[in-house]
Image 1 (cartoon, helix red, strand yellow):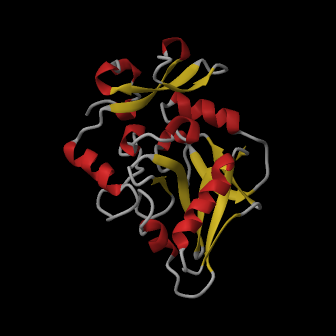
Image 2: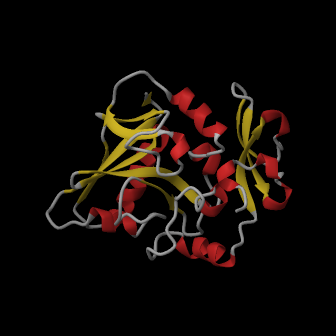
Image 3: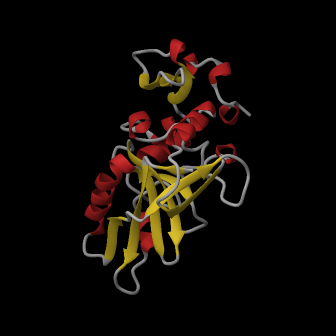
Length: 233
């Protein structure tokens, strides 16, 4: 199914020798030099989420799978860091993001249970509502409404493969690395029944699903509210 609420930004080297992976690697939370796709974020210098997205390869180009409503803002922010580098950064209107449940050759890099995900021609029935219901049923959060302005590790980024602690510097790396080194994540995002949501801690509500996303202190989260992938080992 096509996810109509997603868009694709294409990064292209407009002159030979430009290192697209190196450019992104110095900006975002995950390692761009290894196997793609990966989930990553662009953070503020204080380590808070500005945008989250997937990064794919397409030949020599890179494709950024992001929220459609944030695509132009993300492209503009990436362009600010480009400086004099010969890199094209623009939304590719011909491409869209696709998803389906089940196993296959293109599993979501965050969690295999999320199903298959790929980038292709922008066509097909819109599956955005089904996707939202599926990911929330697994306790996975994403997007501006749920993640913006939170510390990246509070968004369960380490548990969902959204951060590399070995790749070197990126924007917001200092605070993120310090939290990891101290093993000190005081709050987390969790998906809860809407009836149990704390209005003071609520980030997003989905009445049609009877669910909400709360940002709660770790010590007050009941164990039964944690998804399997977030349970203590």
